[in-house]
Image (tube, rainbow, N blue to C red):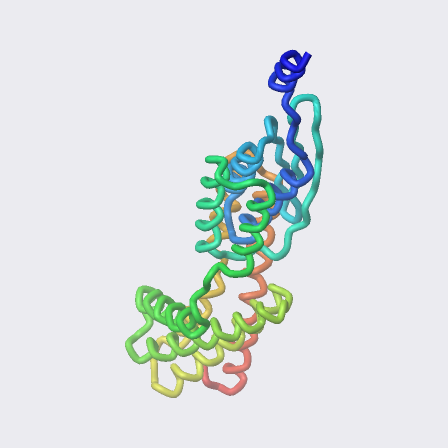
Length: 269
């Protein structure tokens, strides 16, 4: 009798609880999306988590504002959804999530341990100090400005305007200011500082200086993701990303236009 019961147990092992598996996989997908990953990367990480934690079947729906997942083991199945926050860019968190997914795929972590690791990554993934990012962005915009034809007298104002703009943007994002309002305010401030600096130093490329000063706001990663998602057969998600990119560019242009109108009113352009 005991031998028969043992054999039956081996043939029909107790299936894992699907609820924690689904929520852990969804949390990984949410973090990937908010870190700026493409839909293909999100799908790969979510499926790796789900299969690594014991799911046999995984179906994922990726939307711009939510994720939906259906996982199954044997005849059992469960469907769950997860709301997403603002989509940004965090390549370090993206890489850490890939590394964690590899550990999960090797069955090194239980479901609870995986969720604990996800919480840890969300809270403790290191970031560069704000002043380092401001200096790096300032140097990048100054270099792009030079490529666009800014004269040497205008390089300094571009560097200063972009660095200040990046610092202010970080503060606004930290205070959860609407991303479009943030783009307008930073574009206005950076363009104004760049224009005033170019005017004061006697640069002959004042308009180009103002444009180069706001290049930090160009949504390059979301634009690439929009194109990638459409080409990979996800036109709904790709179109949503593209609309967000377009709206961001409109608000950036509005901030630049206001700064130009202000300087023109003062006859400084």
